[in-house]
Length: 376
Image (cartoon, rainbow, N blue to C red; front, side, top):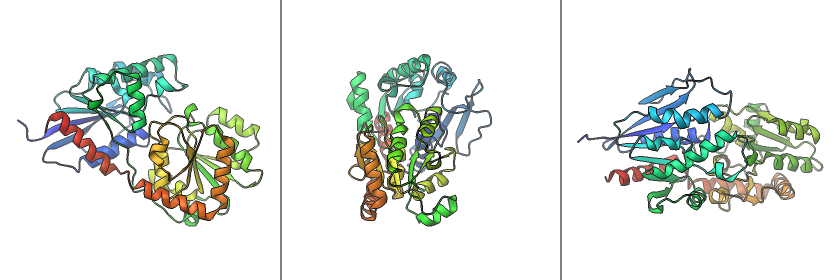
């Protein structure tokens, strides 16, 4: 019998995206754990032709079709369901499928553990095509064939088990972590570095503008705040959709909203949390909500949604509201900007709350699942 148990982690998300960030951070920390028992390997599927990884023991399988410029297209869903699951190499002791979006893979490899980040295809309105929605639902159902399922939050676990018949004893909740790159820094110096206005109050949001992210609540809140605070500035890290552009134009907020491309180095993203006075996150649905955790660790006061998994992540370290309550969001954002004592209180609470989350903890708990499956 081989001294090492060979573990293959399978991923198809870029490192700057939530699932990709989870996979790469997990892989890095796993490689530092128990090298006498395990050897870890990474398979990157569905990658662009010019993708060249720097991670050790990494195999790349490139896309056959030209990729969509951003996001995940119908081509991605077709390839993820019908093609790439059959291309996973054999001969490993255990396979860790890093996302429910690759759920069909468990039909071709065993034993397999899958990390389920959300069940969005069953829960929320989507901008994806009917075919994409159909395949994503089938992928979620497929993971019921896995040996074990890891959920990134208790909320996601509960939602999944409400939809699918699966042995609860073969499940675990392992929260995501947060990089030490996210930390408090001097706001004045960071704003100078980022060439941002030094005296304007800044509200930040990080992520996409898909429907569930509910960015319109922030835009409407900024419109209300502007009446008392004309120089308020809303910074969005992420692509702008035409619906947001039209709303910003309609409300005459062009001078109050600034977009930054999302594909920034993580160090630069971290600095935007330091530059902001408030982080706003009114999502109607999140499987976890990694940007909230990044804001908490950065010492940026958070006003967020009380829906789905977010209260599980924030505890009492954020101000939470119904995600559709524009008035409440606007009032809380104004309060944090105007009251340094309250702002300081939530900054400290956020830093303390973030200490419960780390990629080291995520890796150690994940290894325990591997041991349980392999009976080590």
